[in-house]
Image (cartoon, rainbow, N blue to C red; front, side, top):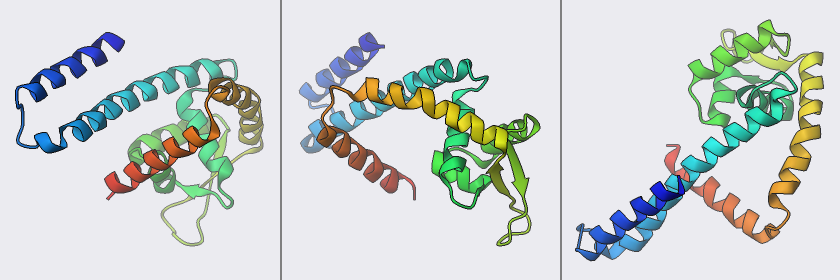
Length: 170
């Protein structure tokens, strides 16, 4: 993957040097953004793989980890569309995973007083136990992966990612 990123970067540099596009005044910023996009794609793949490895002994997957985490952090439950919005995924994809999780006893669907057709997703006792077990492996993993990164860098990265999400989520 590093070779691909380097190759893409050198192709961009060649096009830029050759006067490659009408937006050459914005070329460095554009190239940085595109490199950021590729890096985020790669990071996403690595996070999914790490999540699958980290949750495997718990009988979970990174997809279930995400749903359990989002539901656990909500105070009154979330609807499937609400979970999908938080995760940036389609409602249908979240519905598929929550249906399986309900069959496995990790979540339950409860009536939603605000919307008759869009039920609330809540963790069962088994789901809450899974969340606590996830925290036992997730917290040391988070510490291990950030121990040499200054808090200010993490805060800056988080602000940038949230700003881009806000801009793209229109």
